[in-house]
Length: 194
Image (cartoon, rainbow, N blue to C red; front, side, top):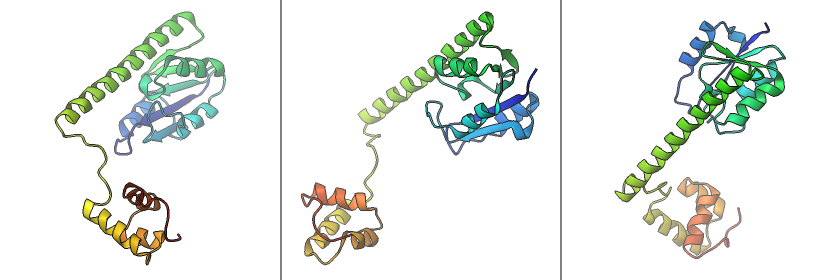
């Protein structure tokens, strides 16, 4: 049997990986063979920790993850990645060889349920947002500048005495915000040099 390589992921930077790390250690994965991604969703394609874990596994090794949804959200992603590398998957201590027909069937069932769970979560989130929007509780991102500040920015810009860079500094906002305010007021991208 090859080496055990661990992978753990959490979706937000506020979440803690301690429980997943402890699970991997309890399953026999050495600390120096645990790869982590923090603040990345399962649907995010760029996951450096997973890339490192997959680079570390060799034919005959076992990739250990605490739960399937930590690895991938879609059946093809998880299965194809492991089969192509000749790697087994240890899911909470149960080992699956995606090349074995029985393991492949069970692995696919687990992956389908993980994908189903993710879809349900997205559906509930959309429903909750629709209810909040209907009640006037969800209005989207608030503007960086109040209506009064926006009017003042437009007024100052119209004098021609301030450059875009100076407006950015005075109002503590980025270039895009200054241009957005000016465009909404019908002033476009004209005036002061950066």
